Length: 262
Image 1 (cartoon, rainbow, N blue to C red):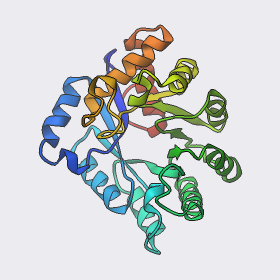
Image 2 (tube, helix red, strand yellow):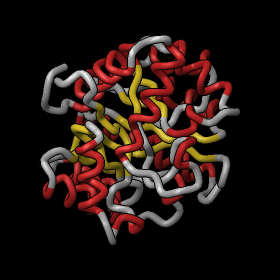
Image 3 (cartoon, rainbow, N blue to C red):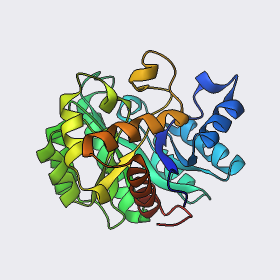
Image 4 (tube, helix red, strand yellow):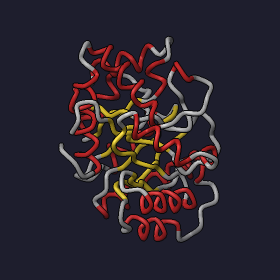
């Protein structure tokens, strides 16, 4: 593992925003030292596209799942379709799944039901989970505690909770991941948590094409920019970015079972 190698642990590379320059965007990521990317589905079609990208590129891996925004009108066989996808080559996680009470695009009771069903599927298949939590900290923690997470663990994606919540999640076997918002000047809480979480529990991500870091804020995000996230967290912790990169890359490989040194 080169000292500056990074893994973007959460991106949406199949997004239509990349349709005109996807190959060039991926080349920029590679040039910036991004050695692997986990491409995350948010509904059945995007999960299928994530599988296709993982089949096309040997450094891209897929997560499949249904985001809380998309649970309102799921087909009755959605779990069986996800189960079949999870057995395909290149799938390393079930996600992103969870709750979103900020936009409330799906009824909360349906969000909770589908979240629990997908958690059960991940336990059945021994896959790590990628958790989306926006303004739903209490219910997310409650469901995770009651239902449990399998030995494969998971990651709290684009973490926005408190240090106390991070500690509770880590106790259940979760990694804590940070994206572009940790670089924003007014992001006091993410900075505080990113500085305090044990190095062996940290991941970095972009959530591209969303949440571009401060230097590119308001523009389309892409995996090459994960280095800005790593640099910010390294500065907060008072360590070299190479040390941060080495740790987060090993962590991502450990969690998702990715090839390479751990």
